[in-house]
Length: 138
Image (cartoon, rainbow, N blue to C red):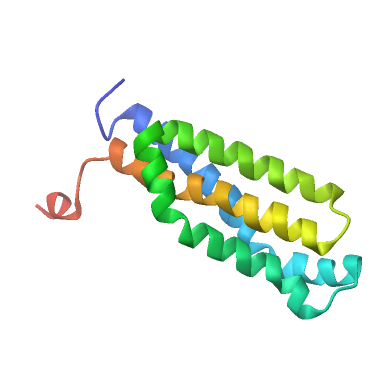
């Protein structure tokens, strides 16, 4: 492997960008899914917005836990497990019979997968790029 700030680091940055686009995209499509949940499941606005609130809360509250798991089991393992978990949970939503299953699968379990992935991405970028802002200004 080359040193920091060299060729392989830019491949890692591109992969991290793709992961961020996918994971953040799932969280940001709330406006589209909110209306779809109301129409498809016939729920009120409170019930339709609950999965989005729980997913965001789960992702943010489990950030420190995800960091500890990354240290214990390795950053790449945590990213891989989180990505697989979030993917499976999102795919299970296709078979969800009601909004409760969406909340459990997409919001709860998918939020855990997102937390594992998003926290570790920042660590990986820090490992491959060693320059700080102060070094760049000199």
